[in-house]
Length: 444
Image (tube, rainbow, N blue to C red; front, side, top):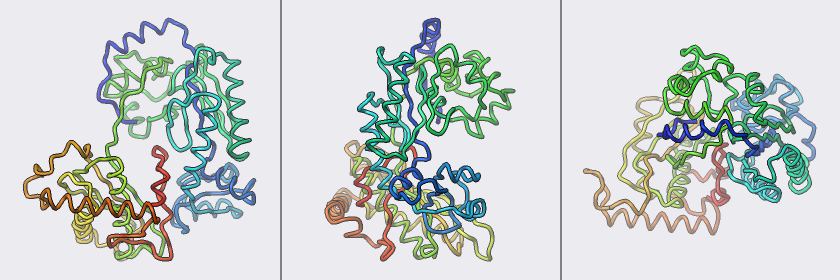
């Protein structure tokens, strides 16, 4: 969780004054258990009760993106290498990810939850937050709502789709509560129990506290939850190194602070390459394919990009360990596919000169420094930019025409010199847990 730009100090003081009041149970947080693997078990009854992992591509060199609870019992987790997972469990079933199905189930689950309580925020593909009303925030009422949601998902979405639910005075604590009992749990954190229940946790159990923040807190002498909870607002702000620490101080005590505004900062795609796509020529075509998809998303969002980034993971010549390379180039503010692909060719040539890879394992592209399309004056491009207004308009018209054709006739009906995957068609967009693709992206 990145630190916000600012939180007014007086705003936090207002919440400090209200801490003496009783804090109602305002948030219900639902977290689907082993979501991708559970969807696979729902779709294929033969997988139920068996150890299952979902992988991005069919190769032992990649990592699990999800594991069923039967697989977790063998020590397999998200991120476990497939070869290692097979060694841990000889009966393991490895299935390729079907991301379009995960999105379809996601929408069905959101619809079902909404039948029982209004959905306030979709936090990820497998997490949803609901704000409770005054007649819904008693412990008895909360238990009934949670039971209805779980029963509704089993009956109307799928019996394999279990969830853990947390209920607390604010969304952060509700999310932490949902993690306290898995699978298929329900944890309620009334105000009187918050401090005692949090004291049992590790600092890493706080969403957004990763290794870097743990090291920062340790440098300030904070290595336990008890020590963190004992900080006053000023000390918390100093420990975090930003106003975010003061905000966290109040959140961990139950204050229901409003969310801070967010904005889309980048659009990108990455792809773990199967063995047949690891040569430099095939990897380049995949990178072009990913960029074409990102460009379509950019136009759908009515944005322009001023920066293009390329990242690769590859084997070095001579059998040296794999290494990563990444770099970016500045762009005039563009949104057409032709200009973006031309910039990618420049980046790709630089990467080959710097990196000299033998085989690629992963490629990724990112469009950054986004701005609304209508806010850009085409005749004020950066000095030296190759495009003028007429050229940009023609390229944009071509790109929009391609969007319409592919949307009607299917992904890769028309391409601009990128990899349509031939017999091995692209499986569509991958799901970052914090971004749910539009179903339209699976046709691009």
